[in-house]
Length: 293
Image (cartoon, rainbow, N blue to C red; front, side):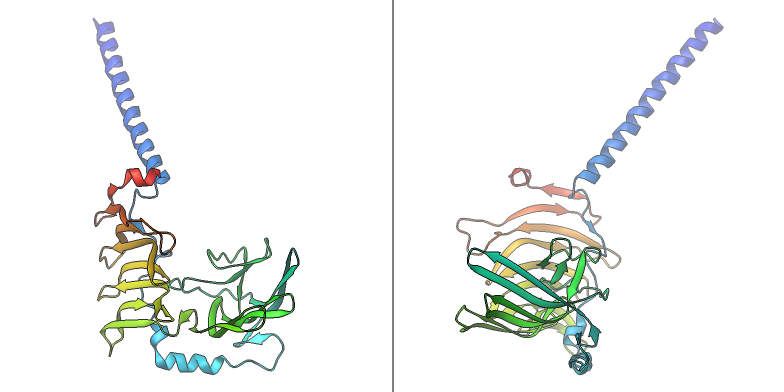
């Protein structure tokens, strides 16, 4: 009889161990799937999506103070008060020779995450990039920039810590002016801003404008300063992924992602909701058919 009872106990212990192992396996699998699925959580890292407004762009006092510092120093290779190093990149294609002449800074400047194009020198690939700046891989462009085709200047302007700044000019191969743009630390000078309260500079929307067309990153904010909507315009058309957010004070949580055309003026493309999340960041909907495509 005692032997039989011991067998029963061992059997139940075995069953419990199997159940616990299955639960642990299921939880492990769930965590793995969550890690592999970028849509599993709508909570956005503060590093990736800031929650404070880019007010310095519209602070006249700050702007005037910075303008004083923008005067070039008489000392060699010092621009906007920063010591720089000259870089030249020459590439040849068939009968054309292209030369980029610019300056870089080793200063670990915090890049404004609201600016669409951040220009940096990739030291490994010896090229200028405008996306995904990584301080461990390269340096921000800072100071005068000139681009040549053969011996003819086709583009010139200035950079301020990786952003286009001041007047930028583009020419054809016969030195005829094609384009003239004005920037202020990466923002087109004609950017349009609406306010909840202009006196306190509570920004509601920030729309980049070039030649009366929407061009660049668009932002809409809640009244408390939290990001509400972000997306990109190109030639006046919405492009890429536009994101709406829940209004949280302590964290940034995506509400909905809407996919627009990747290139402007794409025929027969209809925007669609790619994914949705609840207020806690849990995925509640995903367009599986579109995701597979």
